[in-house]
Length: 497
Image (cartoon, rainbow, N blue to C red; front, side, top):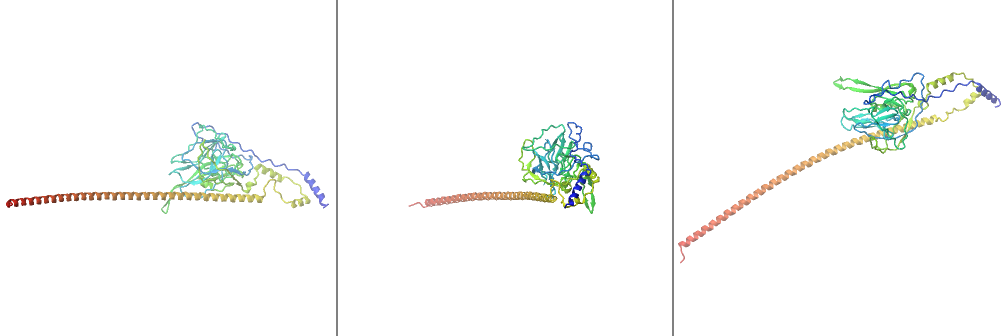
């Protein structure tokens, strides 16, 4: 023991005298500032869709990259909405909608059903309008996606709706004057939209609050479900690619024209939490994009009530359910953030710097001490267990929601089937009642006819009897008169003595 103590002291002196490597630079926290607003359009024109000119360009080499911080649990109000059958009026909101939530759709109950909802709507706060399969309210009606427009420091929002045949979405003109929406009681406003002005959709699940994703008008918010979360401005949705399959006849079977719509999502490495550039093509249809695997899974909670609420109308309060807390399931490579580029370079420089040879005593001590996690970091096993439990819980909730929607769709189909059967039975009963009525009326008419004939025969018989009576009386009177005449003549011939 006495021999080891001097060795430890000597090693401590050597470590104190060794040159120290400079500490790594702090991670960049500033986000790329929003691009300058585009030139004002004429007063009677609607805002143009984002173009390459007014979108943020890829960051130059060596630009600062923000370190990703997994999102904290957030309260979410989730509802079903009864969408209007015409374009609703726009509303101006003072802060950006939160990042998208994950909501994989179940199989459609009927081929004609459309996936509606699955986006952030406004009800005095950004409320999650839960997605569901729904039939068009009238033949040939189509679903119109919600509209988000970054203007100044606010957001102009128009909720999704059913459009009549031939009706197209009309973007609110730049000259329109709107009153800033008043937040609901107790609502704390979020950050203003961060990104270029113009049409956009919310950021991918797990992104930094306030960041928006420029996109063409009509883009379904669900297209960014599978995109990595963003930590700064730069991601955007570009042009829609249309692929047309021409008519082809194979073995007397004709394949009709089919158009498959895809959108492209691009982002520089400095914008994403993975510090990797993005250039992918995803389905433009909401139900297909929402079914893709997300990078960060933040499941949309099922609404507390299956009853849909009416669409938002300014000045008309709607009773909302209590918020539900949602948790993000972050993959391991993001749960333990990867350093930004400059931090990596600094760490590499530190590793390349010469280091003193450790003494045998220090080596023995280091090997004897167990590795300790950094202060405040969760134990890896606990973190993995929590993630697995959260993933299992969210999977169970998604399955329960899918079963619930399937049961509701089946109940709705059974209801419609029962209503159709009841209507058919009603019509059948009405037809039978009408036939019986007509039959009874015919019988009554026949009875009246028979009674009339019997009355006529009675009257005829009475007339005949009266005639016979009079004839008999006349004959008796004639016979009487004849007898009296004969008696008178006899008396005349033989007068009494």
